[in-house]
Length: 330
Image: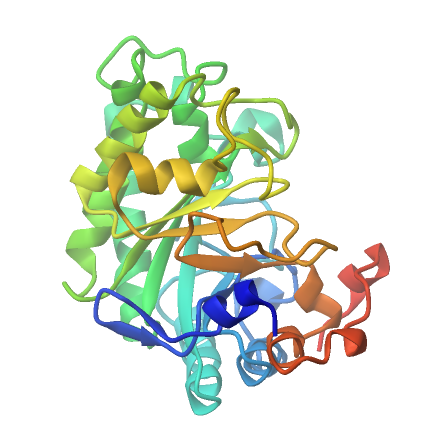
């Protein structure tokens, strides 16, 4: 086993949550929850990754219970009733396999279709903001009831909360727009609402990024100082862990320093961090990541046993990721 894999295979804790190792399954939208309700097939899919050795699974984005959250009916929701029962099946299967699982809560923002129905930063009034905070808190309470071990807030990749962080999509002149701290203010309100809705010892993860799904060159922060201002607001609001999403984890976040986005997040806040971005496709983690945990994404689609195989010296049994793996679901 390489030195990097040996380090990542060690047990760790997030707050009081014990993890068998430092490998995380990254959230990946799969669109296999009819009517927004997770099924036995979803439960089996997540259980397989727990059996394969992943220390912490983060679910695909689960939509908050507000009509503006999405236009899609095959993406899971995190709402009381049938969806909650479906998620309880998922968490039960993962726990039975010895795994731990976090729910990612999500709002599409400007990616909702048709575009004229999308709730975006520039369109939201105070009443709509209150509605969203209530919906985020209710999804978090639902996650706790459904047996999740942690909650992740999706504030990355150009969706609603990230739209507040990005100057190109946030032109507000009130307390939610302008400086990096003010652009982070509404995501921070969401963090506070979620923190208040879940048990005090349940880890709260916040996922953020520079890039957007439709603009890989986008940036919410042009300098470390700007990033520190944003992440400092997140930490003060109650974030326990920062999940720094990059397209390629090995790329520097800023010119003149080799540190990636996760390493900068740790340097700026002192919080535990997760790094992600093409890990194992085909590159492996290196010893100086500057991250506490490493998330695997696409490589787990066709290799649910990736962690077990990699940490037992059986790398040759791991088949390379191909685009066709995205059609697999087992």
